[in-house]
Image (cartoon, rainbow, N blue to C red; front, side, top):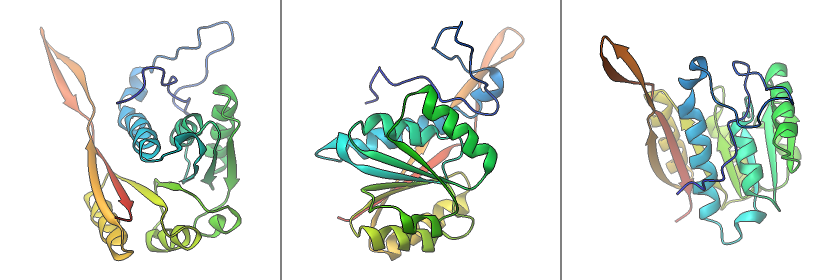
Length: 211
């Protein structure tokens, strides 16, 4: 279950922050509703990860790549006494992460500018890692994570079926049990006097953990 106190969506390049004169509650514009599955995945990841921890507020997590920081912010707010490291190599994305960190007061979130798996070498052993993309280096990233902590929990986000298959195979090859969750978001579209639900691309979350 997602806590009703979950904060509003982090800002993105398509959704600039509102000025101080406006309300803090941010309603997504039509141009960003199509990406709501990513925000749903952020909430699902933070809930799924923290629910599995006996001391949910104390874990260390890493997000690779962090993109705009939506998952990183969710994890940082969930781990109020822990720490989250957001690994990202794109300069524009790094700027958005810093903006979201300040907007949501996620001061236990640290941005690491670089690429995985190399950027992971300087980080402490994580309890949980979210992998949003590896640029073809999935095995190397998983190797680096498990070298730091053999019992770390991993979550890989995928849109393409090929990525889904590769993630399940990679996690299984490393001795982890893989569990797949599909998240689908639809929005209405008018057709005359009717309202039709139009589905967006589903997002797959592949959780990997020692059994």
